[in-house]
Length: 206
Ligand SMILES: [Zn+2]
Image (cartoon, rainbow, N blue to C red; front, side):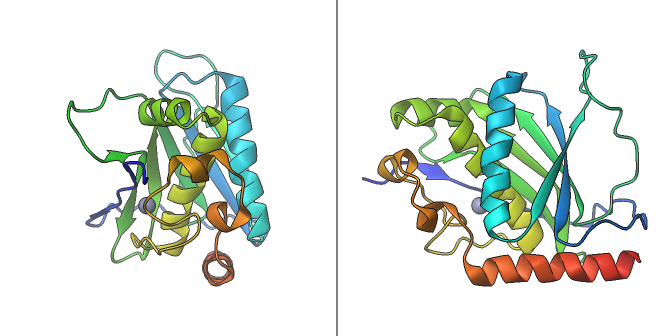
């Protein structure tokens, strides 16, 4: 049976981020993380490792920056301008879902039609925890996959969900328990497209 897990992507109008011209190694993306969910450091670190592993298979290095959230003294101020497609922002939130909702969104990405990309994604830890428990899967692994899925939307500049692979819309409990690369990785076409996007952005920034 398919679990009622659904990833939702929202297309919004121009929310232009400030551009800067700092060069970075090709195939690397920096993720500024805002841990509003107060997720324990160990869980966060395991989730990052899972997302980084998925992207390494696609030839892309993920770098992580811990950004300070209100009420916390940890993390950097993260005030430097963002480079579209190279610096991404991840908000981890912990929201109690609306009662009676049949599909649960684990995350969302804000894509900009004109920029053909976006910088902001949100992943909700509340349903991630609930689903991981029901599927007897590790919270950190599911969270890492959810983060990788949202980064995928931003780098592919697409709200689409193909039938197979990490970018599919529905994740069953059986699939969640397993580690089949076919379920939790990008297709070679998606990987090539993301690397090409990063190459073009690097060229534009230089
Ligand atoms: Zn999605």
